[in-house]
Image (tube, rainbow, N blue to C red; front, side):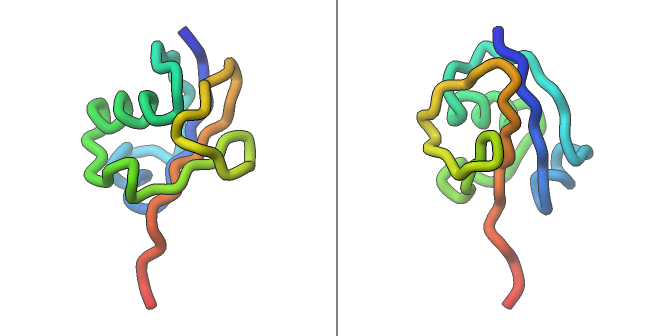
Length: 80
């Protein structure tokens, strides 16, 4: 199990009911973690619609999780 810190913005923050949380997960990659969170919080956005940053750097979805990572899922920007 790995403990990671999460930050949510925009639509994801509304759906999670929080701007962030610390979770313990059995997921091994960022994508697996998002799939787990999507099931838990009912996120309506597919992973392909998001960008992800790990420790303040944009990251690939297949990046392995490491203890203490800070992960931000970034939804598409709305407006015009």
